[in-house]
Length: 312
Image (tube, rainbow, N blue to C red; front, side):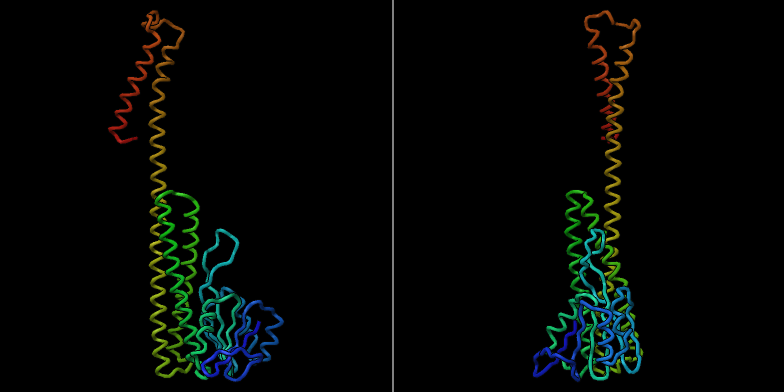
C-alpha cells in the first residue's frame, strides 16, 4: 500500500500521487508486481524496494544512479504464534532519497514510522537530510522504550520465580533473552552504519545536521550498552536459577535417600525376626513388641544422626 504525504503550513496532508518534496511511505501488504510499478513511477532501482522484504537485511547504505538507499534495523513486536519465539524482533526500514522525494519502505508494521508520521507536521520536506536523521531518532527511541519494557518484564518474571520455580516463567525468560540477542546485533549494526555515515559524509550534512548525527551515535551507543547490560543480567539470572533448581533437586534426593535408609532398618529387623528358626525371646508374651521397639530405637538414633549432619 502506498501513502503520500506533504507538509503544508505546518499540517500533514495526505495526497493521492507523489509530488516534489513529498514523503512516500510504502507499508504492507506488499506484492512483488507492485514493486515494479512503484520503481518505474518513482524512478528508483527495483532492488532498493525489495531489500525491505528480507528480514535479515543488514544495516547499510548504497548509491545507484544518484539515488541513495539507507537500510536501518528497527525493533518490533513479534506476532508469531510460536510460544518459543522471541517477544521482540528487529526488522529493516529502507529509506530511499530520490531526486526530489524521500521514500520509506516497511515490510512489517513499524512503530517508529508511525511516530515519525505523528510529528511530520514539524518537518521540512525540503530538508531531506534532517528528515532522515529524525527517522533515525525515532528508531533509537523505539529501542529505548522496548528495552525498558523488556527490563520491566524480566523483573516481574524474576519475582514470580522467587515464589515458585515453574517452567512457564523460565521459558518466558528465554524468549526475552532471544529478544535481547536480536537487539544487540541490530544496535551494533546500526551504530556502525551511523558512524560510517558520519565518516564518509554520505548524506552531505551541514554542521547542524552533523552535530545531530553525533548525538544519535551517542544515543545508539547508550541503547547498545543497555542491551548488553540487560543481556548479562539475564544470563546471570538464568544461571543462578539453574543452580538453585539443581541445588533444590539435590536436597530432595538427599532427603529421600535418608528416609529410605531409615525405613530399611525396620525391614531388616523384621526380616531377622521373621526367620523360621528359633530366636531369643520367641516364646515370650512380648515377642511381638521386641522387633518394633528395636526398629523404632534404631530409626530414632539414625534420624538424630542425620539431623546433626543436616541431611534433612
